[in-house]
Image (cartoon, rainbow, N blue to C red; front, side, top):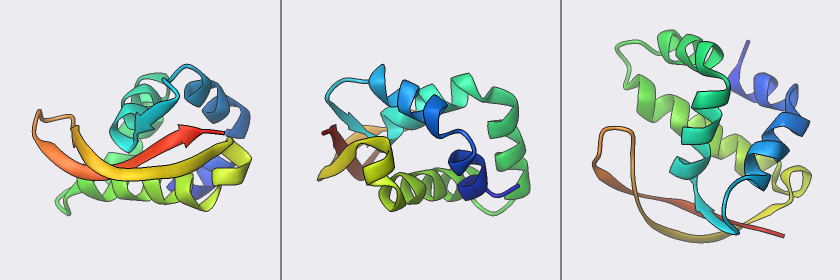
Length: 99
């Protein structure tokens, strides 16, 4: 199952994740909550891209899906800004705001 189809199949749960985040949140903030809620599925997603920058690839696809379905999720792009990722480094990522 693709990341896109997984997220499209779990819209209400993803909206719940978003509702638990602050008004302004980063893609990393969302991914942290998403990966906790769907740990097993998230690991499966990473395994699909093993050896091909799995974290970066999966995280980019999750952010892309948020962007594709902003209206569905009740969010809008805010800014590009720095955010700490799972390995403790800082990247420039999309920030979102609830609408």
